[in-house]
Amino acid sequence: MAFPLFREVYKDTPSDIVEAFLQKTQTPESIAEQIRSGTVYLFIRYDDEIAGYLAYEFDDEGLRLSKLYLLPAFRGKGIGGYLLGYVEERAREKGSKNLHLEVNEINPQAREFYRRHGFVPAERIDFMRIVMRKQLPSQRVRSRHWHWRPCPGRCSAFGITSRAHCWRDASPGRADPKRNDPSELW
Image 1 (cartoon, rainbow, N blue to C red):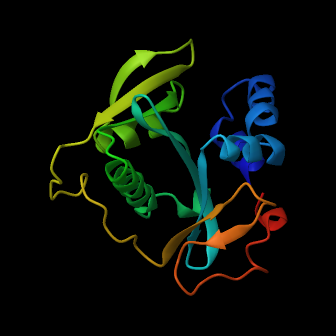
Image 2 (cartoon, rainbow, N blue to C red):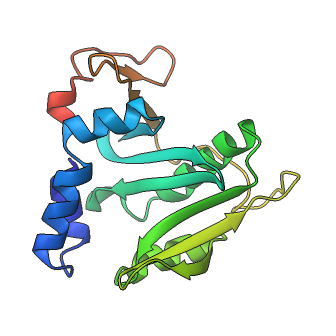
């Protein structure tokens, strides 16, 4: 899933850069190592179809959103906003007050999406990437950007653990080992 998604999202980025990134960070082996180091990877299911995936981890600055990618057919349905609310809740559970992420400068749709959800540009990392940050309010604020709301449609997330690539569905009563085979997803 990651390879075709990245190639589509970063079609305007030189292909050698995209391929090097994929080989370094998105092979099953590199993802397993990231998970062992504390990164959480979740696949997103929408109306019983795999819609995309996200990854996050905690660091000294708070919660770092590492990946949030949806297949083209699932964009514009409110799923991304739902997922941001989901990671905000995970940050609050751990006592984090900040979210941060890196976004490709030549991806204006992603930059605008994060801006609409309260992220602001903070610094440039290199010639292509910008860090965006969002400070979480000390109290939950009732607005469309600050609280976790149900996802439109039937949306669920299920993750991978580092032991033997064992998949589990995070939705109660929805686990299906045949459908959660990583070879079908990755």
